[in-house]
Structure formats: C-alpha cells, structure tokens
Image 1 (cartoon, one colour):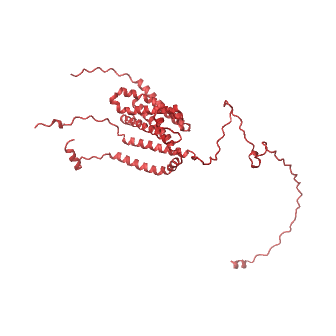
Image 2 (cartoon, helix red, strand yellow):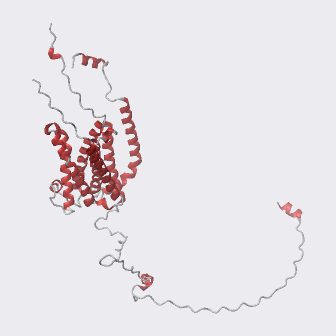
Length: 245
Length: 137
C-alpha cells in the first residue's frame, strides 16, 4: 500500500461503500420480511415450543433432534445436487459455475453442522439416555436401532471428511480430492438409510414421497451425468512441452 | 537517483470468483434455522400432551387391533357386543340380551258414523257505532 492511500482514505476521497446498493437493499428487504414473518409466526409457535420444554422430561430436545435431522438431510441432498450439476455442466445454465461451487461447498459444511447438532442435541433428551460416547462413537451402543443409528454416525464422519477436504485440496491434489468426493455417494446412501430406518417420522404420510422424490431427482441427475460423460469424446493427447532451460 | 525497485508491488493473483453468494448463503442459513425451529414447533403442536407421573391416564381408549387370522390373510368378522350389555342396568346380567317384548296389536274400533248437525244461519249483528270508535282514539 502506498503512502498516499491512507491520506486519501482519511480525506474521504477514496472511500467506497462496503456493500453495493442492490445488495444492501436485498438485505434490508430480507430483514423486514423476516421480522414480519416472525411477528406472524412466533405467536403460533411459542406456545407449542414452551409446552415441549415443560415437565420433568421435556421432549423439546427430541423434537429439535428430529427437525434438525430433516434439515441436515435436505442440506446434504442439496450439496449432492449442486455437486453433480457442476460436474455435468448443468450448473453453467443456472446458477453459474462459481456460484454453484461456492454453494456446494457451503451447503455441505452447513449439513455437517446441522448433522452434528442433530447428534449432540440428543444428549439433552432424558428418555433416550444417550451418553457422549454413544453419540460420538459409531455402533457404541444404545438401545434404539443400533445398526441404523451407527450408519448415521458413520455418515456424519464421512460427510465431515468430504466437506473439509475443500480446505486440503491444494495439499492433497485435485485427483485425490476427487477420489474423496466419490465417498459422498456412500454418504448420501447412509444418510438416506439412517433417515428411513431410524427416523421417527419415516412412518408419516409425507415421508415416503419426500424421500422417494428427493432420491429420484438425485438419481436422475446421476444418470444424466453418466450419459453426458459417455457422450464426450476423449481429449486428444497434449504433446509434452519442451522444458525451458 | 535510482528508483526504488522494492517499492514496485508484485503482480498478485486474482482470487477465484465466488459469484457473490454471500446473500444466498445468508438466506440458506436463515432458512435452515427457521425450518429447524418450525419443525420443532410443528412436531410439538402435533404431539399429544405429555402425561406426567401421578397424573391420571388419558381417557381416550386405545384403538382395538383388527382381528385377523394368524397368517393375516383373511379378516375375522368383527365381534360387536350386544347393545343391551352396555346398558347400566344389565352389567351383571346374562351375556345374552333379554328377549324383546312382543306387544300385541291393540284392536282399533271401527269408525262411528258421523252425525250431520244443521246449524241455523247466524243472526245479523247490529252495526258498530262509528262515532264511538273514532272518539275513543
């Protein structure tokens, strides 16, 4: 930084707004809409939330674990959809390659966060009696469907490994990073199996169409990816450059 | 005077374009948290009220399981208790309901012949005094 820039900044001639005007308007509109929505929704929600936290064995932790699990599933699914749309070049149509990549990375990490929250909030539920070891160690016990719960625990660790591999891409190389990314298919399968077999809400009327529809969309995208990959002709071999001396 | 070569900034690599996704990420996070809270509220609203220790059990009787054969292929006919057994006065009585009381038909007497009574025509009444009614108002 040259010595003239602080002087310009102090004089105010070189100051730029931190946020562009359209972005500022969007954020303000979102804040106003969110506040209005909260005014409408909170009076409906608060009594039920309060009731679930009362009593000797409050069920609020269990309800929160169930709702956060569904949100984590949606985020993992969204990360998968964005990732396959990037590799199949569908993301170039919408929302654009860099945007899709940034959102793919963000949704996978957000899914890790919500999945971790889903697991840790169970410690507050006095009915299931999970200990920290049972929550963090796969297949470590627990009376409730240990195989299905263990599959979800393994999925959480694999998802965290895939999600945080974004930060190690330069160190491990793109090839290894892509190989690690193939684990995400197994992650989705484990998450889906955990949700269907261990989820309390999987018997609900909406659960079947929800899981079937989301899986069908993902399978369709994978099929499109495989078909477009076969249609692309192989690249011609690039002749090796003569090394500069 | 020689220019200071170290003062020339080195060409920096442009950072990868992220597509301006900060607002979308913010909205995604907000939507995920709102969905979690909303799901919690929805599950809590749909759940039955908690029964605390010492409280009387709920008055709603559990739904009876459908009676089926062991193989589950053919449904058994539903056993419906006789309505008389549910009556308060018949709890300790026999399992079979009491026989219905047969009421003998009551003989209806034949209609008697009607008598035609010829009434005399009504006598002409005197006209009301108009001046009196007007004065009474």
